Image 1 (tube, rainbow, N blue to C red):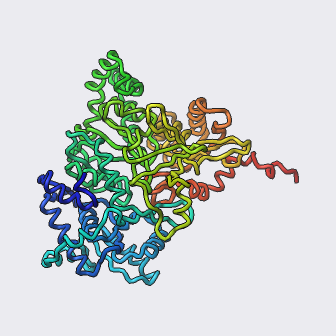
Image 2 (cartoon, rainbow, N blue to C red; image 1 turned 135 degrees about the vertical axis):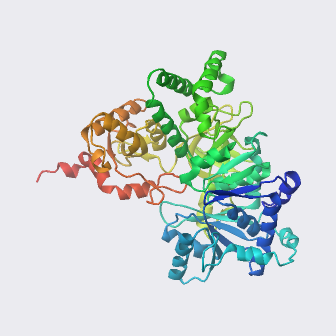
Image 3 (cartoon, rainbow, N blue to C red; image 1 turned 180 degrees about the vertical axis):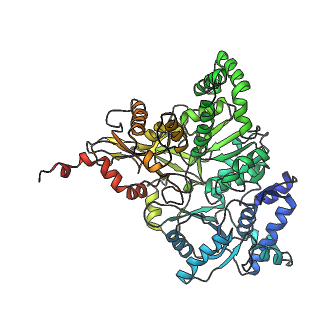
Length: 595
């Protein structure tokens, strides 16, 4: 730790500590391209020299808009070790947000992964009359390419140590713009110290038998980027999946010891496994669901009985072995973040021998505040783990989680007002989440402060808790609980159409068109039964009284989801205004007026 003060210090540390054959690998057109430690470090240094020759200097901002690939790392380290800062741009950014960020961040140079992303950026630059050079990572005829900079740098003898020495731990490493649901995005300032503190604090998450990782969550998000730094810190070889479409095949080729994910991915994996179980017959089906129900009862290792362990050993040998094989067979641990993980999923994956460590944090906290771990008494289901060593957490009188420490942002770029509002009088950062600390030191998040709403009757409703419960049904892909200022909570539901169509076919219902399927009376009746069952666990004022089924899944491209797959509630409400009005039609006195 003493040798790693700035993030790029990881490079010298890696060379002296690991120097293994493959540091990173990327997949292009079906083939893995691997980079040794020497190749990696030499490429980074050449890249830095080339950037300096272009006139890039300390404090400049350079944007990267690309999917995960080794070039992302080359650019990141090359930029940071000369004192410039990286501005990650999600490939799915709206034109408005891209337009705003490029100007607000004073971007000097842009690296775009593909021709399509290059052209997207160029369109914005022309519209705003901004003169910023754009280079591609892919080799594209007639476009500037990053290799031109790197290859030119290889011809130079610039002493980089002078530039590294000029960078301090408190200097800006990266400027990350959060995707707000309203207004312009805010640029979160994160320093070298912020990230170094966070990945060293998280080093206990990856045991010594964790040697290989696969990466597919966007490096544009601080969650994956911090974990990639952690991989470098631990000497873990990183394989970048070619795309989300090839992730299953890539996992089975790499056979990784782990990866990071968001709950939505685990939900889809679980739903597919259950669907296969439902297709079984006779003894195989009986064994599958015996193992599944056993897994759902899994408790923390310290609370497990010998009798349960014996049953679990049988279940793992007969059923859960196939689950592990589907993920390559070598999983040591999976880190889940970005949203709340259903407790039952955590239990069943642990039971299957696929440990999932749920953590919690925000972009502003670099990002991890707390996380479950493999240490003795380091796991508690239904929580987001124990607070990291360098982070101090307190719970405000209204239940909001507040935190302070060297991994917390100094504030927002060009936005003093937002910075002032983000901290309390004692310098604690306001997370915007409601939570509580257990007696044994675990943090439990109950909801987003801004997403809680009050019904017309004055009762508070925590939608995330309810949504997680409803999502336990394999027939629900997405759900949003609504009801701000209304007499009762309602819900917008996107069915899991693959599973719904199987159910519909068995019932003799035409399942060809989603639009017609969501209007079918028997289908609506089925979802009413699902909600009735889930509602039983909530107070009368919380229960969803009415709902609407939607024919199209919410997506990042559609604007309904953030890059980490969280719901953009305001956007969803706006897009479905007529549907919402239909749910509350009888709740509006105007609809009962007599002509």
